[in-house]
Length: 155
Image (cartoon, rainbow, N blue to C red):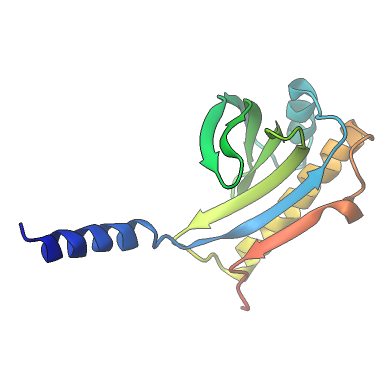
């Protein structure tokens, strides 16, 4: 194969692998202490409509980052929960710098849901964080939780 053909194929593969469109809603809050796993599971199970809660430990991972170089993120807890029509994920983690966060989110890949479905998911995530806060009053109030929306539909 000629060099230009190899370069074009390589460039095309890179472009195609980076074209996924991700839409969703996310809430992140920095905490002084991470809630323990059984508390998170109980809190999520108490959210009205939640039918299923699963927990898993995500193993530690290493990656390269500017300007730090190689970083080692410790293992963290991930909890998925769902109702009959929507769902979300909670992650409780401490990063390589020692910053502890609770992250509550739901994303769609290559799909923009209707506004009603998006809003239903946002409400579920709000209810999940409220339930976590009720179970662990040391978590910051909802006013300190930062929400990020990606691809929020206008209709």
